[in-house]
Length: 450
Image (cartoon, rainbow, N blue to C red):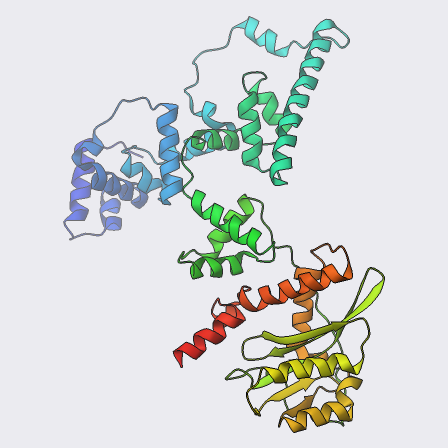
């Protein structure tokens, strides 16, 4: 490509800026690639006529790193960045970027011209013979370095449980005066570019520092039950509007991960029940509190003893109305639960209560208790857990977030902690489908708005 003088470049840019010609036609008329003309235009926009004066300058490594950081932080293209910093050739930035990624800050330093002295070459090639004093000293130094590295890493792991690249960089940085950085980086398994990036930003204040502390606080408050989406919702509830991707990135940086992993339960499609019809018919949406209830019994073992839990859940907001727990699945477990739930109602309510076809719900006593209160009974089809999916889902959540995560000293201690968890579930555990509110918050908010 022919070389152009500063005056020729300026004339071409002014032809385009006059608005009479497109940059492709201008580029074609002077025999230059349209991308080159586009770069001239960008240079002129940021530096004016001085953009085409040959700078004859040598860029320092720090200046090169600042340019690369600006391009990375602001998301500008190579051509835009070259125009902003008045760098004549955008390809220069490509080279700086490649050098930095492969060799860190040292690779951005100007290389010495000429051949290295013969003695220097020979020194690099020569290695101490095996079993010699020099070889043993080198091995001793390597072991000393490994020991010092592991001591510092162990100190960090005991504090937070997980070692990040930033932590490894911190260890290498602290040991840099005792051992060669190159050897430390090789042993730590982190690239030079990563090390120099963190060192460059080490003294800068963390722009996400307060947000990280808040995310850690929410995570600890909910005992690891919240993933990044729920934490995002809780942040919004506290007045912090943050994108879920940023929350996910920060949680990954500080080593936080939701401890709950749900397991799906699969069953088969059975027949319609004979005691009561399937009136609910998987319509799990309720328009007001105490319109549709669901109930069931779940079993689990603790300290070699079987325990049975039976709650009532309101489909309006997923709130646990009441529950009972016992060591035997007797009918009194269900009848006591009903009495507790009825005690919270004022007068007779037009409520639909849905269950599976368990023997408790087929008893005349159960049916009579419902009819006396004017409550309609609905039952799932035989063997079809999906007809009562909401309460099944609650059991899965309760076991994942509570039963499998905590340690209990006794059955009595378990019951005390279960009461706390139900309180937490109703008042503090937020749900996306409830607009980021807990069941009780959603119910109260709806009542105030009505």
